[in-house]
Length: 251
Image 1 (cartoon, one colour):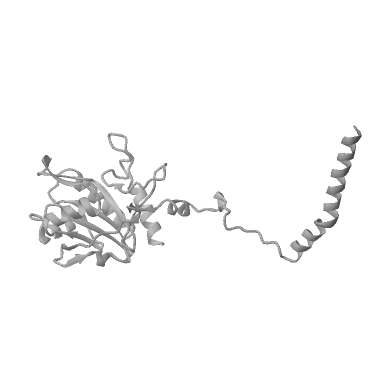
Image 2 (cartoon, one colour):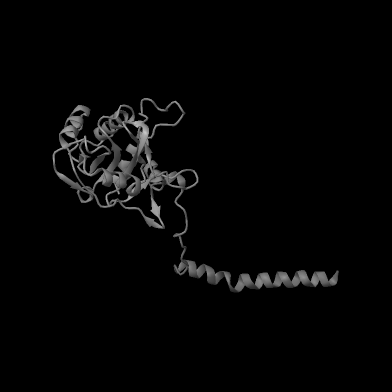
């Protein structure tokens, strides 16, 4: 019992000695601003994030072998007979689609949705749309011009383009990873994706991420905001696309 008492006394003495010697020094250092608190690794409180900041943090770059994927070079003719390249879209946020004017099913729905997107950003010179025809042999500039007028295309940065079929198909499949192919039972011999790609001002493909942190890559282009869901229960993503365009325009 005596040994234990001596031990407690010793510990108490050490604590007292620490308080007498070191605590005044610590207090003085704080008073003299010699103690710096590092806030760099502290997270911003969730309540202080705006909704746009939360969404912007989810807009990722699509990476191939660790490198952000950029729109490849292209050169095609638009509905006005002008040559359009990827350079014409630098400094602009734009949406990409692959379609053809005689498509009887998904293309009309896709382009009606794009017109609704166009109308939201009608006064913004930094927004555009790039529509590539996968049937360029029949989709001449004149045909594309009539199609644009029929659908109400008014944005000067909305180019409906035609050119060599092989190059357009390669641009879809390799450049954007948006499927286009020749099939016997497809629409007039073709099958293609109804997805849209979103491109930022520097020409990089961007998208939101899923719940696991993986990029979604594309936006569903067929389902309208009015429909909300399709017959399979897939939700519309046109609202999401409009929100993300606004985010990229503000970058």
